[in-house]
Amino acid sequence: MTDAAANSVATRGLDPRAIALGAAAILAIGLSSSYVMQQLFLGSPDTANVRLFQLLSTAIGLVSHAIGGATAGLVARRRGAVHGGIACLLASLGGVVVTLVMVGRQGQLSAILNIAFVAQWLIWVLLGMAIGVAAGAIAARVAAAAKP
Image (cartoon, rainbow, N blue to C red; front, side, top):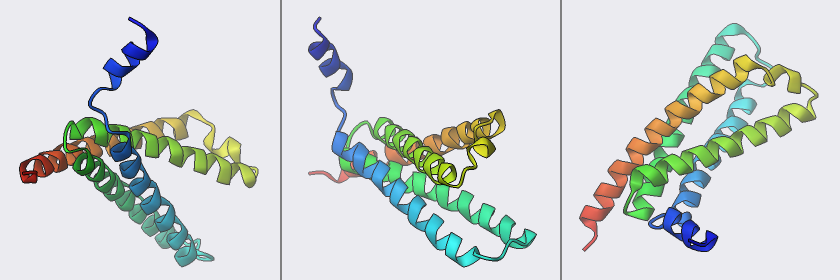
């Protein structure tokens, strides 16, 4: 089997457009909410505001993965779990690149290049992917049932 044939078999049934739209939805929600929250909490480093920022960031992150996974599944109309999972993974990788650039510009890379940050990031990526997989599967079933 040639490389092209193997690649075709491996990607059969995947809709790159659906994956890209799902990942874009996640990144758009995450990046825009991050900007808005930074403006809301600017100059307010007290503990209550930090805890509220953490809570809102977590909630918005999980909801964005549900929306992105559902978007991927809905557009694909098939294999929604796979499309949703891949969209969530790509968005998470894109998000960490943005984080590395932003933190690196501040000269603080050592703060996040440690095992604790990486472990915590992986846990949240897996949880976000699980939510995106479930949302993608449900959305694909709904879309397939509604399709004439």
